[in-house]
Length: 456
Ligand SMILES: Cc1ncc(COP(=O)(O)O)c(C=O)c1O
Image (cartoon, rainbow, N blue to C red; front, side, top):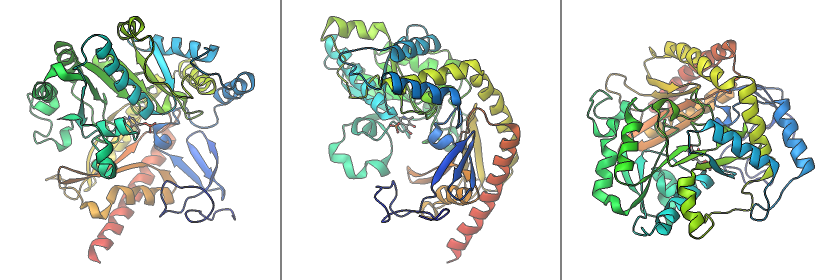
């Protein structure tokens, strides 16, 4: 294929994620930049899918991965343990809240979500409470694409074909102030205060509920909506009162992304299960982590003796080495503190977009920003979903050398057009200025394109 020509289905032999798109071929990464085979440079404002937290080309992590693969590529986690997993688990324990100090490592966020929900169920069965089997989740939310994780996700578009295969999940409205009828202004609003979660538990009978799962700061579904300061304390109390496990899905927002190791940290709350993924190994190898405590595991140890969720690549040495080197780089270079301080710069610069007639809201924390676009600002009227505003913006931006993560959805009869901004923690102030400048230009071009579509 000649350099610069894009490829896509039906060319080649790759089963591409989309069969209706032509893909540029990326040959190299440098810090916050991706470079294609034609030498075109893309500023990666979303760290891929919120993954490359350290940026590309980190020699320490690359070396650790290579050395691990050369020394010991793989062992079966049922039969053996190894240095990389032991050391990584100790590092994770030191970063998590007290008591959250036992970790199972897997490859994808969805794997860890499945493991958390299954181990929660197993705990209740082995505690002599087999009636505790229901799962409560927030809507909207996203927890992964495997069937249990997908069931727990409020993503009707992803679920439609598979409904017959999914399990029933009970739901409560997510704290999403911009789209809430209270507009985030009513103190006792059930969704924004957390009272709606208790209502859901009481409706479903808390004696039959095993676990409540939620993202501590909204990911793609609510576009980085940050719950109120008292929200998670209230949820913790509700879960404790009704003996329901609290599963914190930090796949997108954890591992430093919001300026603290865990997005729950500023709330002073510890869950029963905490899940990390995406950026935990900086994208140098696939890695996710399910962290829990002896309080849970002692019951299994005295019962069946084994958590019922194993996969071939559980505790995979090369991925664990990538995770260990990533955590050591975060520490050595003070990158979580940098994420918090560069986040302040990012939000200062994004504030310039607030006056744009189609920017409804800018929100988030650390280096995670969600921007929600609307047709009409005063009424918060969304664009007609058929215009695919968010997707069009991401395509326009990518063509102009800026990578964004779009999310477009239909929520309770309303369209939602969001993009997530989440650059690597090493981003500079100049790169943030470039990012915001390119975003503004792409936004104006997108609005023009959409107007053109409407006229047709
Ligand atoms: C909050 C959250 N949980 C779970 C997942 C699933 O992770 P994975 O795609 O690695 O399976 C995602 C993916 O975007 C996510 O954002």
